[in-house]
Length: 471
Image 1 (tube, rainbow, N blue to C red):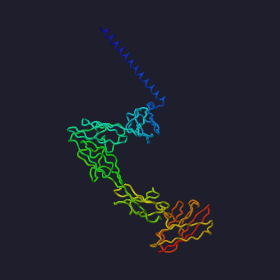
Image 2 (cartoon, one colour):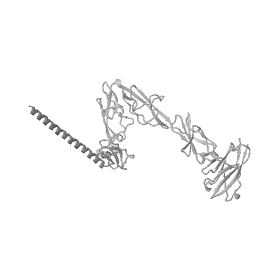
Image 3 (cartoon, rainbow, N blue to C red):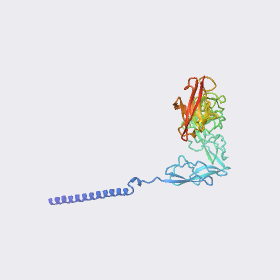
Image 4 (cartoon, rainbow, N blue to C red):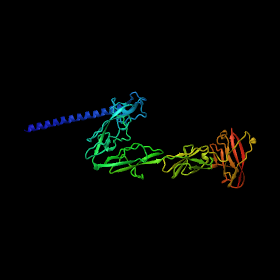
C-alpha cells in the first residue's frame, strides 16, 4: 500500500509538471501573436485607425424620362439624404409629377426623410396635361355611396351628397383610411386632383363632433367652411389666401387677434371659430427737403404717405450705408460728401416700407478752390470767404480746398495760422487738402490769414489766403 501511495504521488507530480509545461507553451504562443500583431499594424503606418472601414458613398442619378434639364448626379454617404434638384425638368405637353424610386413610378422619393443605402436611380413622373382621373368614394358603411367622378388634371372634386350612417356624424372625406389628426382631410374648395383618388368617409360619435368655422375677413379662396372635427384632432391648415393690398399674417383664436392658432400642435376641444388677420401694405410717397450740403438739415416729408400711426425712419447714403435712425431729420456732415442720401419710412401696423428718391451728391458748404501756378510769383489772387458770427444768409462754417491734390507730393499739403500748423479735425481729405474755417475758432471780427504749403516734384510752394469774420 505504501508503495502504491508513493507511486501515485510521483505520478501526480509528473502530471503537474506536464500541465505547467502546457500552460507555459500556451502563454508563449499568445505573447508571440500579440507581438506579431503590433509589428503588423506598425508596418501599415503605425496607426491601427487606418484599418477601420471607410465610409461608403453611393451615386444617385436622375432619369428625367425625356424631360430637360437632367439634374447632375449626386454623391451621397451611406444613410444620407438626397438634395432635391433646384430646378424641376419640363416636358412639352406634360406636368412634372415628382421623382420616384422605381421605373414603374410606384413610390415617390421623399427628399426630407428617405435615405440612400446603395447606388440609386430616381425616375421622373410625367402627367399628360389632358389627363382625366377617377375619384371614387369609400363611404365607410354610410349609404348611399356617392358615384365616382371623372376629374381633369388640377380640377376640383364636386362635394358629394352626404351619406347617412345611423348614430354617427360625418366628419369629412379623407385621402387615407387612418384619419390621422385631420390633416389628410380633403378640402373640396381648394384641393385639386393630380392622380386617381379614393376618398374615405370618416364617421364619429355625435358627442365628439365639434364645428370649426373660418372667418377669412375678405381673403380668398375660402376653404371648406364650416367643417366638423373630432375632439382632440388637429386642424388641416387652410390653403393660402390672398387679399388685394394686404398680406396674410396668421389665423387667430379671437377676433381681436390675440392668440395665434398653431396648426402643428393645437387641438380641437370645443366648437371653434378662427379669424384671419391681414396686414395692410404701406403705400404712398416720401420725399426729402433741404439742400444736399454738409452742415445742412434734411427733412423727410411724409405728407403723401398712406395710413396713420407711428412712423420710423432710416437714413442711408449710397442706398446701403446707414447714417441715421429714428428721426425725420438728418444733419449732413463732411463724411457724407459725394454721397447721395435716401430715407426709408415704416409705419406701425403696416407691411413694408416706402423709400424716397436720392438727393444730389452732398457738397461742402461755401467751398472754393485755390490754384497754384508753376512759380509762386505767378499765383493768382484769391478772394477769401466771409464767415458770419451770427445770423445772415451764409452759415458760420466755410471750407477751403486745394484743387487736384494728387498732383503734389504725398503728405506735402500743410496749413498754418500765425506760424502754427493746423491739425486735427479741421483738416480733412485723403491728402489733407481741405481746411475747415469756423467762427467757433475765429471769434473776433476782422481779417485773418491762413497759409497753405505744398511740395511738387520736390519744390516748395506757398500761398497766403485771407478771409473775413463779420457779424
